[in-house]
Length: 255
Image (tube, rainbow, N blue to C red; front, top):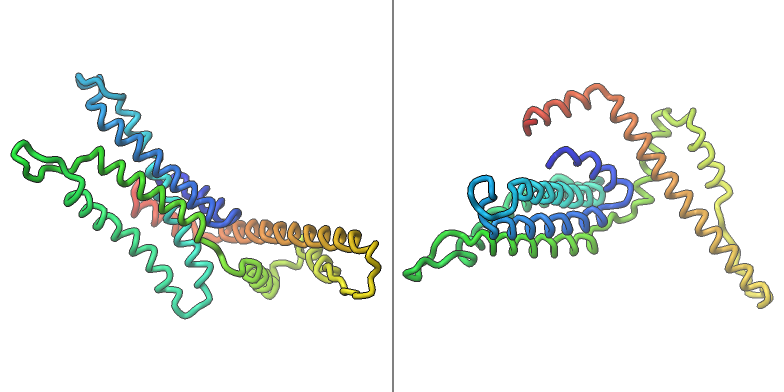
């Protein structure tokens, strides 16, 4: 469950939280559906049954674990980036974390009160595991799809520019060839003056140049984002205290 988290964090930074939320919805759906039908088939042949091998259930919960990590990261990252500069950033981060912790409470209540097996005398029995897994697959798939639509980082370019300015003030960018090239690009950034007297036969060429300049600007912004993330990652990994923090989390969560 925790091994691919660094990869998920990398993808979340590079491609925004939305694709990661979509991925989590898919892995949740596949994982719980596979677990439901594996449970329905009964015990595996290794213990005298006719069901699928035990490894299939393990694989199902590998998908569930990846979905849990991905959905958690996409939600927390969105809140951290959107509210990291406000005075309520602690509350903004606490909300998705609390929601993840409390989700098991209401889901278990749905299972015990609605998705239960009936005993021969008509009374309420144990939770119907097959139906409960189907319920989780559908619910979390929908949650992942909704997250793919609504989880957006607002004014990400502004956040990147602020981070670059902070690194510039720290003196860490003086030897960066990319940073020097970015300064030149910004000084020569595109801009056109709308001339109402422009002849109509030049409109197409004017629009083509504007479109090319816009694409060039977007490409430069993407390169700046990639460069910034690489720079921040190198500084993070070079910080000795990071390894103590990682070791502490490893000991807390367990191998």
